[in-house]
Length: 108
Image 1 (cartoon, rainbow, N blue to C red):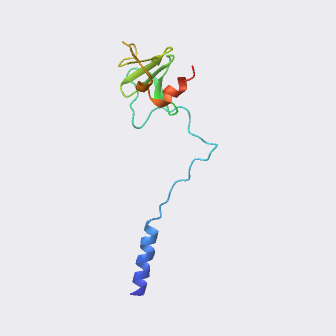
Image 2: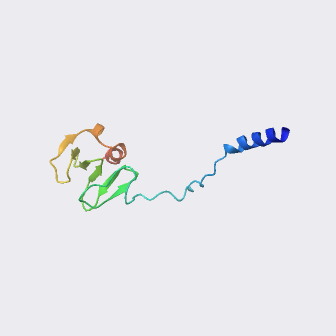
Image 3: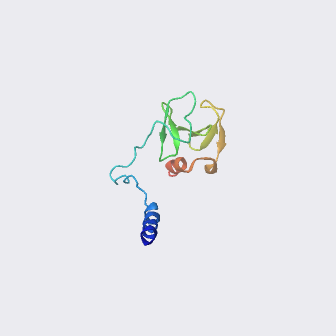
């Protein structure tokens, strides 16, 4: 009976152990761009890549044009958004911009 109790205690104690992958070494940070994001779909009809630092897709071949969740964002001295890359564009303030993207342009 004592052996059974000891085995149960050891079994429950070890059941909390979890094997984990080693963390990424400091010198090997993830790339600045990725082809896509697991949650956010890429923009329709344009080439793009996901930028994890900005938290948006960067539209390739266009200057200061970004996309996340059905909205395109552009910077031209101020922020605008649109449902399509060609517009029409609506002005917005920083509250309507993904935080990482806004920080990139904050000191411009």
